[in-house]
Length: 249
Image 1 (cartoon, rainbow, N blue to C red):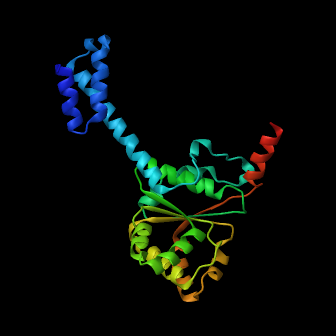
Image 2: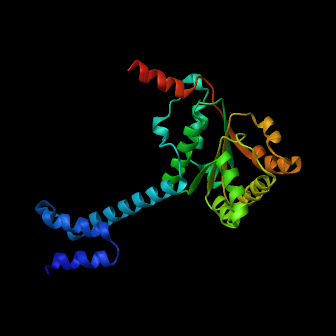
Image 3: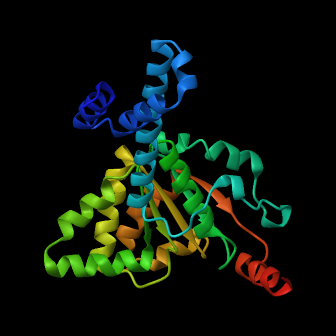
């Protein structure tokens, strides 16, 4: 076994896979032999770091379960959508998540609330901030199932753990008393540990009626709404616009 093979084998034993692969490539490229030891070693370290950061980002994105592959670089911020560019630029830094603040995105169906929420989720992952996405109706159903099969503590933990919890389409789907209580518990915990991003077709002054218990509604909304940044999306349905473009070819 050659020295190169021995070294790459040792690197793999240390789980420095990318460094091992890069070292093998260096051995095959004679022009790199002109570099100093420090320069070549620096390239190995940078390759390993880049690979680890890429894997971590992929893990965070998979764990977030974002339904849209959205990114701010692709944001359609035409004036008719009513978005405040300065506010979006500020919020995209995700400082509000680090300060345990919340974000509410409201607007009619199809205007891009879910897409924008996913863009925030993806941006959080880029910044190494764990996120998780749930559709409100699916979450309420999952809470009901977890109540019956005994997995509710596990679900509570999953809802409390990520730094950013995205709750999409709030107001769609019936909320049971159990779901309302779980939501209150999660919101109460997250006031000290993380942030909520909620999207809804309905303005916040309608949210109280979604809860089966007005006392819980008061408690949840007091914790969420009054310390939240807000984005109001306007304009024509983005789905209709995309469909029109496809038809026009």
